Amino acid sequence: MQMKNTSFILRAAGGSYLILCSIWLLLSSGYFWLGIHRGVSNCVDVALFCLSITAVICGWLCGFRIIVTDTHLEYRGGNYLTTRIPLAEIGRIMFTWIEWSRTGNTVKILRFVVITRDRKVAAVINSQPFKGEELQRLVRQLERLDGYDAKLKMKGKVNVSTLRMFFDLICFAMTVLSIWFILIGVMHLVTTCWP
Image 1 (cartoon, rainbow, N blue to C red):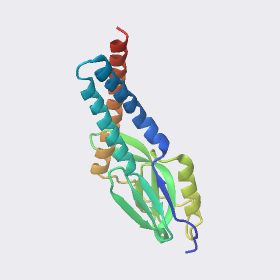
Image 2: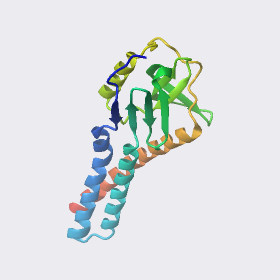
Image 3: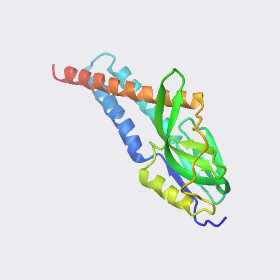
Image 4: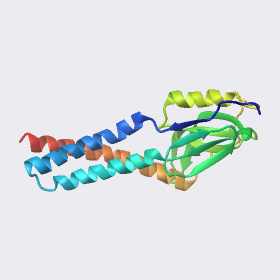
């Protein structure tokens, strides 16, 4: 296998932190201001709650990492579980729709999939936290591998564990709840500041 200068690390993009955490920090600062300067009851507690959500989101995003060395590709997701694939086994890396059904309905989720040369799925990567340009750079680096086949198709469907999908659904539910809390928080701040 001939591949040089492949060692690089992909981490969650700064935009992911900005999008998911900034509103919670703004709400927290607004509630601190209301609690300390205006004396509104329970606002400091709500501010601490908003800060704790920010800390959980930051911890989750810190888990995402893709490392490529001269010998292997390593993916760590937001749940801090690591998958290591030797570069000699990688046949293709591509975007595909993952299907998951447990309740009779099928949920489709776009994921980045690493396929081995024997057409099996080696890793399912959540691509949302990463920059698209960095993922394209990763694909270009891996296309230079001996034995990489851009037309390689995987056997069957991608099987995703219930635990991983449950974790993804919890993250989705947290996002929906975050939007709801943000709207409630903004309405509360507006009605408290301008009676």
